Amino acid sequence: MSGPQPNRPSDTALAAAAGRELATFSRVLYERGWMPGTSGNLSRRGDGARRDVALITASGLAKGELTADDMVAVHAETGVGLRPGAPRPSAETVIHAAIYQATDAAAVIHVHSPHATAVACRYADRGRPGTLPLERFELLKGLGLADPSRAEVPVFPNWPQVARIADEVAEFLKGADRPPPGLLIADHGITVWGASLAQARDRLECFEAIAQLITLGVPPAGGPAPRSSPALTAPTFPGPARAAAPTSRNGHRHDQHD
Ligand SMILES: [Zn+2]
Image (cartoon, rainbow, N blue to C red):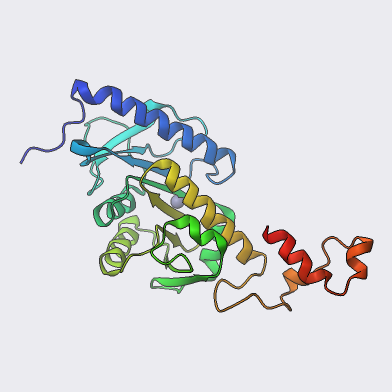
């Protein structure tokens, strides 16, 4: 069986366009502070007959300064580089490959966004994959879930050997029934996928916003948030009218929801 041949002339323009798209998304996510230093990685799988190839950000480069030339062609489902002498692909390419192998994703984004990372630390189960249960949140509707009222997000240990993380991701996805399009890695960050980079980015924004609510004190699951939650009872806007109204605290919560 002959392997993928990403250097055919007909592929060059497509690869350049995909590379520019990856560079643009990288810069935007970097500017949000979600890819500090050279961290984070993005990939995009080829379309149609080129589904066996993925372009991924090169290792060790600042994500706010990438160009189309900084993307590396790899085999989508193994992560093996396809061009001898090309820059080294992201150290976490094998995690992208595990996702492409088990799902219909066409794009994968991995960042170190602060709230998702904080929640990953909190819900880690040391030494083995854990679970972050999510219920109620309006933004769950932005994740393309089979049941948008709830999700169980896996939380993987941050093994020093990335291949071990990838193996656990592959094992989870193989056995999962319609898993959410994202996973957390304890002490590390979040990886999200979708049918395009734009969809993966949208889903990432929803995950990060839900994680921010959790870091503010909202319980991730188990019915309505308790009114005694310290983060929710603080009189954030004690204006005269609100301070005089006995129900001002609950009213404030509804104001924020909208
Ligand atoms: Zn990372």
